[in-house]
Image (cartoon, rainbow, N blue to C red):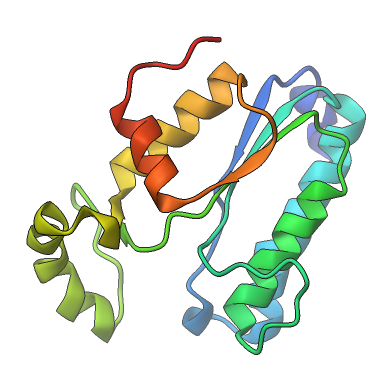
Length: 172
């Protein structure tokens, strides 16, 4: 969590895509908050000094609760991450809340529910696209929005993410 050795490498950054995360069931509660919030804060502290004009793109989550009053640990942690970002000086801050992310390529998430859901989710998403977004579409939308930096700071919902992924390249 000490990014000071990278300050020179992080100077003059135009855009930061922050996508670090872990499944909450794979680590302790403390580790989940550390990975989700504290590492991000350590990075933004350095970036605030070295690249205060950067655009910051955060991989958030549907249901994030920036008030941290939710009884759901995941919602509190993701909400805290969003609140910590909002406290930074970055002029453009984009939070992506995709909901279910369907894996493409060879990656397969671990866990019983994923083993059951992933094989049927792809065909279901063709009929009901509102239930999720593919990992490649999410990445495409995040990159398009982050590099263009044309939108005011905001949170993007699954439908908006899909529109940016499928639509024309935004103007810079």
